[in-house]
Image 1 (cartoon, helix red, strand yellow):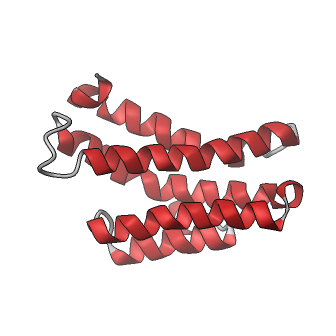
Image 2 (tube, rainbow, N blue to C red):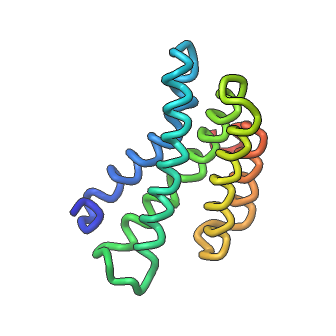
Length: 141
């Protein structure tokens, strides 16, 4: 119901974007287990964002006020993806290289899909990819 109401679009987008970067926020001085869980949850939040954006693409008719939620998500996602990259990099020591690369790979698949939807300018997508690969906040911090 919240996706169908334009007045809730910003709150929904904000909550999802916040969940994506929670591992980076909680990773500072927090229990490592919480950081790992939050980092993995951040990848799940990225997939939730992807599903929402898929369902609100023009012409689907599945969600009213499609432009409101799409605009709110597109506005917050670059910084959220950058924070997710930082969280993955910060948790790498505890998770190991294999798990870290799996998380990065899954996140990168979403960005590849977004490139076919033309949601973001190519330079924005490239910056998000760099942030995921390197764990650097880049220009979105």
